[in-house]
Image 1 (cartoon, rainbow, N blue to C red):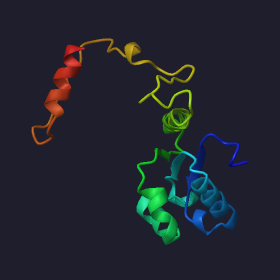
Image 2: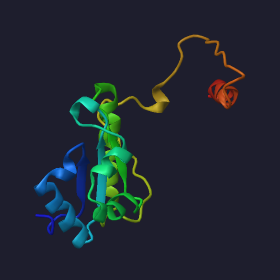
Image 3: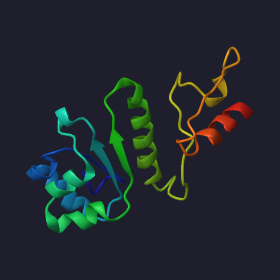
Length: 147
């Protein structure tokens, strides 16, 4: 099925590279020069780890091909509030690897019932305080005030 796929997603967690079947898919994808999207499990209780830890699990002969080619990368967040963001990042990465969207840099994806930036508004005047020890905080507060 790898040969019929336009793009391949690797869902990386601890132990992924110890699976014979996963390694077979990895090697086939690389041999066929398939575009790859890396999705990193974030939750340590579900096998999540840093990209450095996941790379260490990977056979040395495959590390450069997988981790040093500027491949699209998304972090899978399990908290409901962040799952939509993770899904959008993954969907965009997958679509941007397909022939129909390869010449694009980003896509204006949205999820039904998702709040739009234009819909955010304060119902009454708000005072925003910033710390002078936080570089950029004052600029952000000024930008908020303008909008």
